[in-house]
Image 1 (cartoon, rainbow, N blue to C red):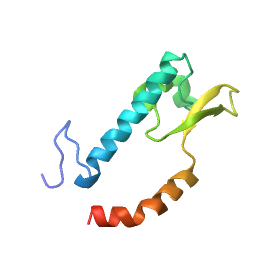
Image 2: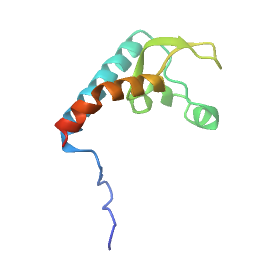
Image 3: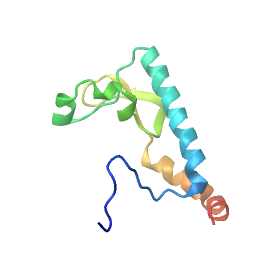
Length: 107
């Protein structure tokens, strides 16, 4: 069967040179998630029907952001203080700063 992937087998286009950096980011996110859990903070906001169907999912690491904000902010819909994801401008700023280095490292 051409193009078929065996069940349970993951295929990714992630370059080898980024594997360790991504693994480290997952661990940083996990540490922040654990800090929030230990402090009794609410999990991330999951909107609409999905949030109702999986009401506790926002408290699990699987639903936590890979790039979480360092500070909490007030959720506009619920009024709760929650951790959100990094704002898009942050990605762009870091991307511009690292672009030349990344081209040389992963070339």
